[in-house]
Structures are given as C-alpha cells and as structure tokens.
Amino acid sequence: SLCNKGMRDRHWERVSEMMGQPFRPTATTSLSSILTTDLESRSEQLDEIAAAASKEFSLEKALDKMLVDWQPLEFTMVEYRDTGTHIVGGIDEIQLLLDDHLVKAQTMLGSPFIRPFEERAKRWAAQLSLIQDLIDIWIKVQGMWQYLEPIFGSEDIMRQMPKEGALFKKQDAMWRQNMTQVCADTHVLAVSELPGLLDSCTEQRSLLELVQKGLNEYLEMKRLYFPRFFFLSNDEMLEILSETKDPTRVQPHLGKCFDGIGKLQFEGDKNTITAMLSGEGEVVSFGEGKVQPTAMVEQWLLEVETQMFASIARVCDEGAQAYKVKPRHEWVTEWQAQVVLTVTVMMWTLDVDEALRASGNSGLRAYGKKCADDLDAVVTLVRGDLPKLTRKVLAPLIVMDVHARDVIIKMGEDGVSSPTDFDWLAQLRYYPSESGIKVRMVSTELDYGYEYMGMQGRLVVTPLTDRCYRTLMGALQLDLGGAPEGPAGTGKTETTKDLGKAMAIQCVVMNCSDGLDYIAMAKFFKGLAASGSWACFDEFNRIDLEVLSVIAQQILTIQRASTQGLKRFLFEGTDLPLDASCAVFITMNPGYAGRSELPDNLKA
Image 1 (cartoon, rainbow, N blue to C red):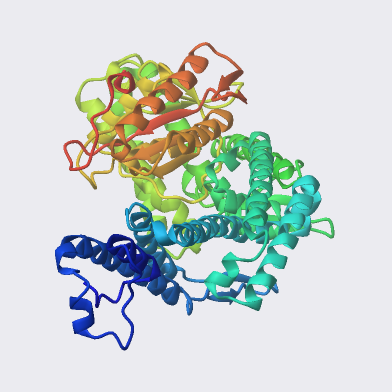
Image 2 (spheres, rainbow, N blue to C red):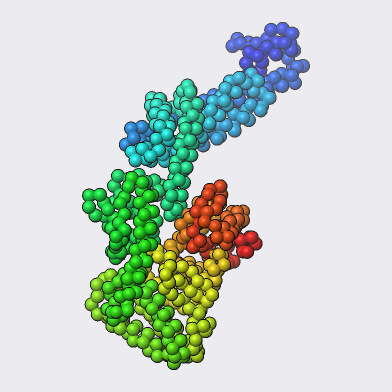
C-alpha cells in the first residue's frame, strides 16, 4: 500500500492523521524504521487509502490521456469551388473520438473518486460538449450555406428577393470571417476556444432559416401562379427562375412542365415564341397567338400553356375540316400526330353512328369493310418511302385503326344495330361540339383536354384495356379516382397514362416509397388541383400507413370540392384554384412484402 504510485500529498496527510504523527516515506526511509511505527495494526485503513489513491490515479491518467488524444486532431478544411472560402471536410474520426470521450467524461464525473480533480473534469466535459455543439451547428449551417450560395449567387434571384438576399449576404460575410479564423489554426481544441464561434454559428443558422423560409414562400407564390411548378423540385424551379434574361435557356426544363413540348420556337430580337416543337421535331404553330417572354418566367410559361391548349384546339378543328375534302391516305401525312389520332377517332365515331342510324347492322358491316380498306391504305404507305416524322405519326395510327376495325367486325357479328346498343356505347368515342371535343364512354361524358402530347406511341387496346378504361371513366364521372391492381409489369401505370393521352390530359407519374411524407404529397396534390392534371401514384401501398391515412383526407378534400363544383377551395391552409379535370389514380401490387393495406377511409 505504501509503495502505491497513486499516493499523493493528500493521501499521506490522511495516513499521518491516522497515525497521530507526521509520516511520509522518502528515498532514505528504511523498512526497519517503518516497522517501528506500528503500521501493521492499521493495515485495513491503509489499504482503504491506497485503494482510493489507485482509483483516483487511474482517473487522472485517463483525463491526461484524453487531452493527449485531442492534441494532434485537426479539422480538414477544403476550398469550396471558386467561392474563395473553405468548408470543413470529413469529421468522422473527430466524431468517433468525441462520442467515446463524452461517455468517458460523464462516467468520470459520476465516480466517487473524482473529487480531487472534479473542477478539471467538469471543465473538460464542458469543452467536449462545446465541441459537440459546435460541430452539430457548424455542419447544419454549412449544409444550408452550400445549398443557398449558388442560388443567391444569381443576380436574377438577388433582384427578385432583395430582403432574403441582404440576409444571406450578412450570413455569408460571417461565414467567411469564421472560416478565415478557423483556417489560421485548424486544431480542434484551438477552434473550440475561438471566442464567439458558437454564438456566430447560432446566429447564422437563424439568418439562414429566415432566408430558407422566405425562399419557400417565394417559390410557393410562383407555383400558385403557374401550378405545373408544383411537380418540380425546388432546385429545378430555381434553375428555371434564374434564367430571366435569356428565355431560350429555359428550354431544357420544358419537358418537366409539359408532356409533349420539347422546345419552343423563338424568333426575332425579342425572342417572340411562335410555335412549340415535340422532342422529335414536330412543329405546332401558335398562329396569331404569339407569346412575348417577360422577366417573369412563370408568367410567359402560363401564356405558353394557354396557347398550347388554343393551338391544339385550332389544328384539330382545321384537321377535321380538311379530313372531309381530302383522301384519308393523303390527309394522314399532312397533319400532326395528335390531330391525326384525334380526328380519326372522331370521324370513326360519327361514321359508325351514321351507319347504325341509316342501315343498322348491315350498315355497320359495310362500314367494317371501309375500315379494313383504310387500314390497308395506311399499311401500304408505311411500306413505302416516308419521312421519319410521318412514319412516327402512322405507327400509333395503325394501332388505333386495327382496334377500330376489330371493334366494328365484332359488333357486326354480335348483331349491334343501334347507336344506343351497349356494345357501341362501351367504346371510347369522340364527338365534336361548340365547346370542344367531348369524350364519351358508356354514360360518362368528359371534355377533351387539348394537352399537346407530341408524337408519343399508343398502347395496343385489348379487351382488358377496354375494361380498365370503362372503370376509370366511370370513376371520373363520379369525381373519384381509380386503383388498378395486379402483379408488377402488367401495364397498370401504362394503361392509366394511355387513357390520359386519349383524353389529352397531362398525367404525372410518381413512384412512391416509404420515405414519402404528407407534406410532399400535399405539394403534389396542390399541383394537381390547380393545373387540372392527372397523377398516377405507382406502388402506392409502399407509403407508411400513418401517412396514407392523412393522404386519404387530402384526396377527400379535393374530391369534395370538385363534387360541389367549387372554383376555389382551401387546401392545407392555401387558397387554391380548382380545375375539375384533375384526378388521382393509384397502382398497387397486392400481397408483396413491405406493402401496407390501404386504410378504410382511402378505399372509400
């Protein structure tokens, strides 16, 4: 006990007190002199003092070792792009040691043997906690700064958001000053002792949160002006909004807002928009309704959307007039793909109605021969030498013509003789009217959407496809959504998208995962309701059950507003315009691992 390395002055004082006389061995103390002091009778008390000394010594050594471990540790500072400042690199090694030492320091403070150096241990634990707090807030501020720096590096964004721009400039100056201080001595302990660094980071976080809040409100305002922006991420939107000076630079992002528009045709010094082009290069002129881009991107994109609807309506009308005076095999090579497909189905509908009214079943059979002849004429065209774009027009036309021929032959064999027979009413039919084309199926009548679809292909229509169409169209008439269900790869999503093409309505597909929350879904629903688009949520039952329950209420809010015929409604605290053509569709793989059962309020 007396030879214990942990024995310090305080321990010898306790031994002296116990013996009633001063006692402390020195280098010259002999064993015989110790034996004369009657220590043997007090061996238990000596052992107790020595044990305490050992415990205190081990704690002191652990404290010293921790300090030694931290001495060489430095933050890795990395130059960030061409900003002229630095960011902190990997902190895994620091965080690993910090986690370990924080636990050790707290354990020490709970030990009864810490009292002799309790103040030192408390100071060390406080410094470790400070380092942890500093790293936590530093990494958060750094992440927010990295996200916002390129945004507010754009003059356009700074001009559009002067208040947030000023706040970001203030934070940016503080960040650069802090990084200069840190780079002067990157040792972790030295950085933790920099005066006011933690307070500076805390203030910066508050500033950046204000900037982020202002940015979100700004983007929300833009989205409410042009609802298709709801389908874009914040980053994609900011890329578009930062191109106010040169409208032609918005072109790469058009496909995110419109299904069929790949490019716009700009003319003259003022970049006047005179036409829209599909990704394949098909041109649809805006006619007299040219669009003049302004500094507000969302404003002229809304005008482009309006002109898109008007132009498709105009060319469909012109195409229908030309159909009556030109041979069909010539007509199909002169018009845009969407015009050809739409007008063909519309004329087929009118011809079948006329044949049934005039001659009943015999008229239908005779028309079946005409359909076969029309199809053969198109096939002959395809076998010849055609321009690339014309060939792309004829491919989906043949699919539609084959279906039209098969339907007529089948109805002829089944004895259909009246325009009111169910077999005819069950087909997807287009009828012209003063207010535009009407799409009918069974008892459902909906407006044709006039969304430009470009030169997209069409699905081969099978009996199952027809059944899906009838179900989905029936749901739309009741302001409800559809839920195709079945194994993976059977065409649930494609069938929904193809009905969207037939209706000329934008159909936005979203792949669901268990990471989706109700806030992200609310943003999506706002876009649907305000733009009148359709959404198809793929593998919907992968979303967590708790979130599905909230989504059910969100969908119900939109459906109720639509049923009541409202023009505007309140959704998640936002006053939104309502386009009644909006609809929600979901697809599911039943019985798969990791899939939720839909809550009852969503099934309803």
